[in-house]
Length: 159
Image 1 (cartoon, rainbow, N blue to C red):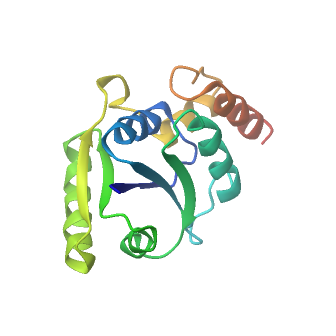
Image 2: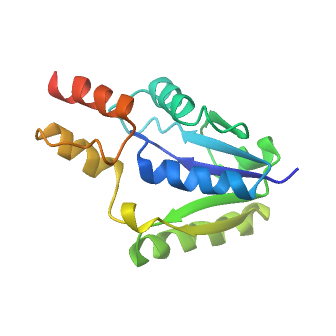
């Protein structure tokens, strides 16, 4: 079985993330969306909330599942029997960092990284930008699933 991991913090999941996951789901038998647990950063949404949103957003894909992980990505890949990491690239600046990570990952474990260029509709998109748009009263509906937008409004405008 060809299995790949799409890792990230997904705080929150955006349509850009979902575009990469959807495209990866057509290339692999199974795609595992790996939600990183980073105890040194406080996210807007808890890991459980992010997993729930991702599961809701990917429910239409029969070959996508969502799991959390902490520690090294390559250890998570090994535990999931996944030989490939999928990373979306928005710009050349993403490539510099992601190339270093890919080289470290292959050196540590032999896990390959597949870079997927982001759909031009989402080439500027990040979770941080979406949060800023909502925080300042803007409309993020083109950039996130509707239910994510509603949760963002509730969370950011209550503070």
